[in-house]
Length: 554
Picture 1 (cartoon, rainbow, N blue to C red):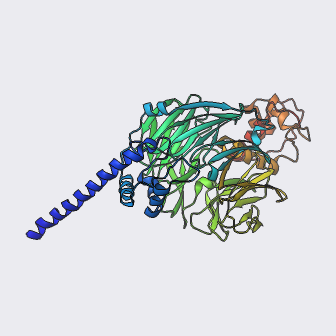
Picture 2 (picture 1 turned 120 degrees about the horizontal axis):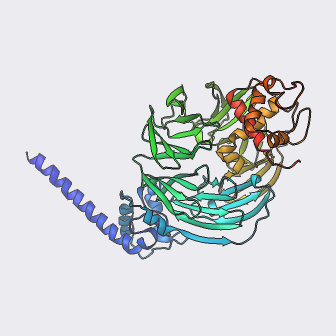
Picture 3 (picture 1 turned 45 degrees about the vertical axis):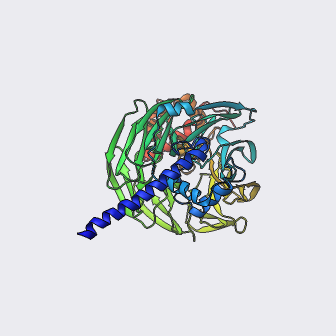
């Protein structure tokens, strides 16, 4: 009986002492830290101080940071604080905190700067590449091998998005800020804090709204893309994996890391419909023609395909190592659409067939890769394996070769110019570099010093609406180029002439059944073979053709 009474008393004493220490830590925090990190620890001019951000930082390192400050930042040294006081602050900032966020706080955070310093000399907006230099917290605006401008953005991590025209770039940070750079005006427009911890951003297909998925607080925030004013603040009950727009409908799709649901957001009414699935999709992508969601869970034991129209999971395949589907790439070969994905912690990438869904091949790249990219211009999949070489996988026979970079530097992430002629490769080190290669000859054209360069972003390669266009170029090379040229007359009329003189439905009818349409088009006999294209092949080639509407001859 005495033991039963003494144990709760002991716990009360221990918890009481701990609560007292936290109270002291709270008081010290408010006195020394709140002016920069916020009274609620959500951050103001300095980053948030919450368990989500601090859990991977050892206590010894936190003590050193508080005691000595951080060079080249606004974090001062608090040498006057004792180590015991610093430990009390650390104990306090590592405790959970209920974050309150609102449309009012978002509105008050808006900073419109319109720092337009120079007019950029842009030759082709579709070849603009935005480079994230994480080490210096900068974003570069590049065209071909030339840096046109740089701007600062604190805590930038990647995930940049282009407006539909490509002339505006939206930049997110993990601590909830979203900024905009106006290429057409040559400068930084401003920024807004959508939440405290941001997962990713997207734009609706019109470019009118910014869609922000947040973990702190759990929500989807919808911002006016021009003014940054909040339009909707939609609370959620789970941790959102990511949100992506559809280019074919006024919808966006999101999933959760910890809930077996898919959310379909109407980007006009902002209503949401949820569909149940068997396991949460922690990572996913939407196929190029927006009929399917390819997803996987943190367990990484299954790759699953969800049919958007039927609302059913139609394919699953067991696989070791979680597929990093947000870093997957796709291409067209021998009448089939394919995709490749790296796997977290595994020394291979896998290749899969789309639409007639099946596993194709596991390709050993001898190291843990994180990104895989390709373009119709290159015969290779460009990937990394955590080492100092660019790994190239042949798209025809899946043989592997590599490009030597700089010994001891870590290669990460390739991206291409819009036309595919240049490959941009990051050396992910503090004293790293951006390497620019000719994507056909593989010759190194330029090396630009950079501190922890990571993502590169180009509207053709990173805007979902251009995925069918890129695949359509490959369908054109396989099916059409013997008779047609893009802008010049060959055996048949050019794509430019066709799309500027015929309606889209007539073009589709003639591709699918030329014997029934040639007289309607004014021909005395039919010279167009029946191609027997799949629905996806047809959509790809028409998408490619339509890019030449109102284009000038080369």
